[in-house]
Image (tube, each protein chain N blue to C red):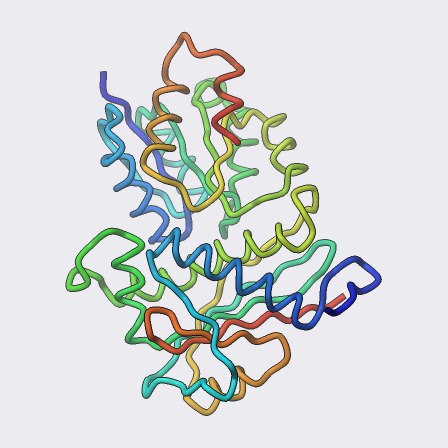
Length: 162
Length: 137
């Protein structure tokens, strides 16, 4: 087990475990999607453009969370979050759902990190896209957790600063 | 009596979900109006009769804290109850918000039952302070 750093923040696998639990909890509660963590060698990006949502946080620790999921998965995510049929979901709603999901995951993750007394400020989530090669690079980056969300390969990454 | 609700969040997903959950929850809801930030919310509050505001904290243009502070400086708006729905988990910040006049604090994700309880409790004139505090748990 990794020891905490000087500011009391877990690192390495302990950090990844906390991120994985927050991800699984919020995916299930908000979108009724079940996730399963994958080993890196079992991760194969989907044949699709990935949406990359990023949110930054400042407080006792500063850093960012990145969530990357295939664009084709986002309408299902939005439909589940809104309780609507997938056919009625607009591209704008689908993209917004990915950002909102990351926003909620970040709130949960930061509480598990430092407890309920710590004060963090969160940025507004920003959305860009990634190619399959960029997704593979993200999956291998330090702080990444690769997982299947209802059989869809996705990545979440935490980068911790000071 | 039906209540008019203002839902303030920069996330379209959050606004749509909260609006739908309010209807599903079974509270006596009249009109639900949406705003994407505090600035837009204040403009609506100046024009529309609103009984209760559900607002996020972290929004561009004007965040939820500044919106509540502006409402507190207005004779007409300061009596409208505000419930915060946010990813914010800090007890320290929640205490600050309650000091500023926020009546209830809910963590995302919320459920229709939680929202109905907030509507029923905050808009019932006989509600006790204790029962309002319980909703924020």
